[in-house]
Length: 595
Ligand code: ATP
Ligand code: MG
Image (cartoon, rainbow, N blue to C red; front, side, top):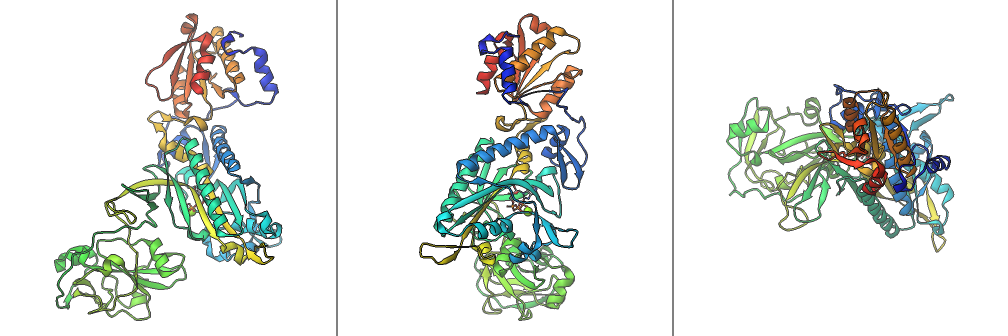
């Protein structure tokens, strides 16, 4: 000890930092157990889930419910810290709301019904109804209507970092899509929409800074606002093959959108000279492909009919080109409802009176709502079902044979199609994990819940609101999806659970190794470096493997033979080879490498 004069440390300095409350900086395996697994758990499908289990970061309690083990929690706390610092920098103020919320608030906003089975509902001993908050618009708006009275108190932006519960239909991929998870949610209040737009911009900047600081490859994309409501919204995605979302981005301009929402300019269909419409017998046809083969037509000249059911259980029929795919989010917008799903064969039959496969625009019951996709609206001499079993029309033309229904964008975009916003750009697809979502809500909640302030002229006005979410626990998994190799996790430095690990070889038997390792451990901690020492009585191979698995960015190996020459071995987690460093100057060297 006292050998690390180069870094200006003495055992006294190490002690004083402990006394000053910098605890948890230095840890040893003997006090901070690792719960690593050799085998990949069979039920973990994606790499981050496998590695989080193998590294002992999380353990499953039940579907979508996870315990954060000490190692995992250290990483999540780091993510929280970056989020907190950037929210504070952007002028947002932290608070904490209850996780359990009274049903009455959700009835006021009309989401008690709308939110559906994802909302976990509870009753207390007095039979009063509550829910476990999946999000907090109602609670914050309730607070705001009581506390914010004058335009002078605006704008203001509140945030919290808190556990949410959503009874996801398919919890999977570990903490990536959990039922209980940690979110940072922020809510801003404004007198007018200009002020809202300004704070929304600030949040966009803060989010970009957060994901940059976390060392993630991310993209901001235009998004659908879903059940939360409002108009303008953008999602932040960490780019990864395993991502559940598909993103379309332009090769030439900055256009990027979730494919739930993305539009394009597909090449127009070839125009045909009108021919005579004719009804053909097409027995037992079920698919567009069979129809195309039997009638000897390209699939793009088939106008297919897709029957959907709205969230209010009303049927509607949508017409698209045979080679296009229906986008349900766009369909919901076109029909001005919250959600649609494909009708079952029975529902389709009930709605139209025709077996699925033979439904078409000509002769459909008039009361049924119908829409036609823009591309299909350009079809000529097309074929479609004739609304009687085993028959299809050929050579139909809109207006001449059947009135053109209201048109809408209904189709899923395809890679290579022209960008909707620039000339010459083509859409490219990538996959992303949604880690953040920002919305301009407008007065959706403030109106329904009566959250008003007095403006300059003493008039009551509903406040304009924004809301801004970040999936704190999901980020931990997303970071692993982007940063790993065959051996395990490779943490970006800002969220690594420890910066350096020390691996003393044979520590249980060599006094020299123990002394050198203990001294180095203390000296690094005194420098404020988070250091982990693997002081287990385990084979070197086991320690090396675990260290790579848990992804510590820097490691120092202390062995008796090298120490006799005054050396230790250093290796960065991404380095091919180790290098020898002088034991006496290793602290200084590591401080330099870490800064
Ligand atoms: P998703 O489409 O992935 O279900 P969402 O649109 O429902 O997300 P928001 O309501 O915008 O999500 O919530 C804010 C953030 O919370 C999301 O951007 C995401 O990072 C995170 N999040 C949402 N649901 C989950 C979940 N089940 N598990 C973990 N994180 C989640
Ligand atoms: Mg969701």
